[in-house]
Length: 103
Image 1 (cartoon, rainbow, N blue to C red):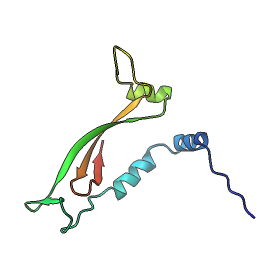
Image 2: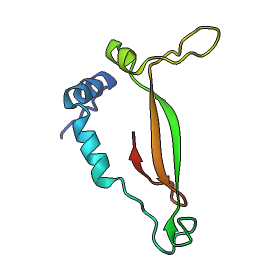
Image 3: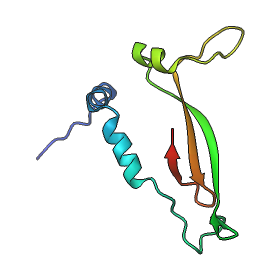
Image 4: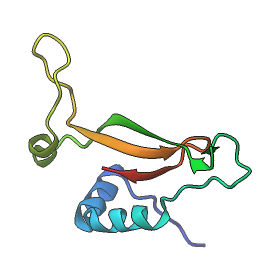
């Protein structure tokens, strides 16, 4: 009988640090595409694909490197956010909400 151990958060974080961002960027560029077909409601308007630009902020790991690179936005009365935040701007297909470009 085999036993399996699920890696803890620390092991996953360390593996992700060793991996770096390049493989994730390559994966996103390969698979993030518009999904709507001609029959998908809300995807087309006057024969053109309908898309929207939107942005959001994501908490990232509380490390000195992330703090220096991303910074911590102000929250109230000169206080700073609990975690560094990455700002993301994305292009999404209306109708499916599929994100196919991001910075």
